[in-house]
Image 1 (tube, one colour):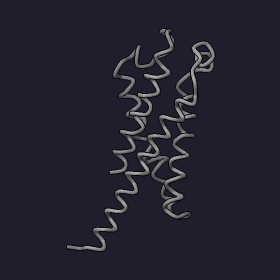
Image 2 (cartoon, helix red, strand yellow; image 1 turned 60 degrees about the vertical axis):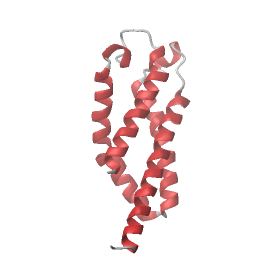
Image 3 (cartoon, helix red, strand yellow; image 1 turned 180 degrees about the vertical axis):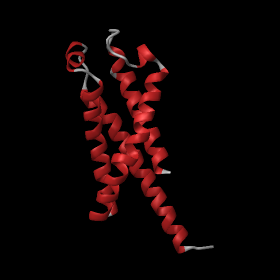
Length: 137
């Protein structure tokens, strides 16, 4: 279930970033939402589908084994913001960043919010599992 949630949140964060920063780019050299439309969303969605089992699931599993659940969720939140920063510099060329005055803090905010929501959903699922374990009706 978290795979689906992660995929949706990553896609929404990337799309939000594209709407906020990517629409400033007014050249046909950049293949963003304005140029390729919903194919952009589809490509981000496919990337996020692959991202969860390759990076997020093993990383969260290792972190969960090392630290307590609260620290795990805080780390996921912080790593999401850092991942947004990395995603920003992967999607937008350095020249576009300078010419169109793009701001990487927008990516940190959008992906940080996505990480925060992911941590809340993870907490909710864990609390429901604990309740079900305590009350096996």
